[in-house]
Image (cartoon, rainbow, N blue to C red; front, side):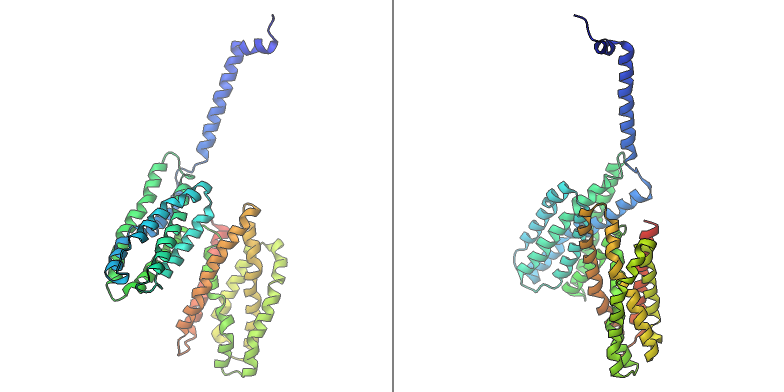
Length: 396
């Protein structure tokens, strides 16, 4: 029985040699492609390692400092066994990774950092002897938050390294060891010093939140709202008070806010017609820088014409934030399914800015009505937030 031409060709030594060469070339190309997927160093890759180091310092490093809390809980604050708080916390740190690691959803990392800060500040509000409050805030809250960040944070490093992966992971993991060394020293000094438990917890929460800001520095839509929303509402909430303090008639002062908010409604629509031509980022940068400049000019708003002009300009430019930010976030999403996650994380950071901005400005204003202090604070926050917009637009 004669063999087919295909069979004869397959047995031809030259054909076999060519096929083997083709297979070898394909394997080499695949290897080269895989090598190209990893940065193996460089500024961006090592900066990722530094960011994960910061988050390890602030989360696992803090969890491993529980001995300070345990001492205080048993002797003073709770007066009974607190071991379940730490055991549940450690269990969640490891076990939550079963879900976050399997999905490898970067949003869990971002939300975990936000949740950690919220739970730590909440811990400072607990009452002495109320075991369930401490258990919820520290045992469950900090445990879940740490678990949401641990696996995604370490796993992202693997996307930047191959040959040096072990070294990079080791450096990042050392953050928890350094944190476990620094946090006990700080906490003992605060808890047993003049600050006390609640102020000490808030101070440590502030430190960790600052490190989380570093960990999220390349998250495009996260840092801007922290600063911009901390200052954006100060003129809106205080323009009526300033008009009255400047000696303007109450009948006019009551309408200063009405003018500002009325223009605000118009400003949410008109700038958006320019988004297709100028781009959401460029438009927002221009408007937020204008808002910062207007805040610095607020001390010169002392009569009716200048108050009307300020209300119109500030109402228009400040409204661009509400009108343009959602199209901007949507444009950053890789797909439609990601839009909801990005918007949710964005509004979480927006909430933080709104939470702290106005109270800080009110404290700076004080009973002596030193207007320059909150105005400098608000103006600088606006300019810094605009600076982050510029960085994410042209650098990151």
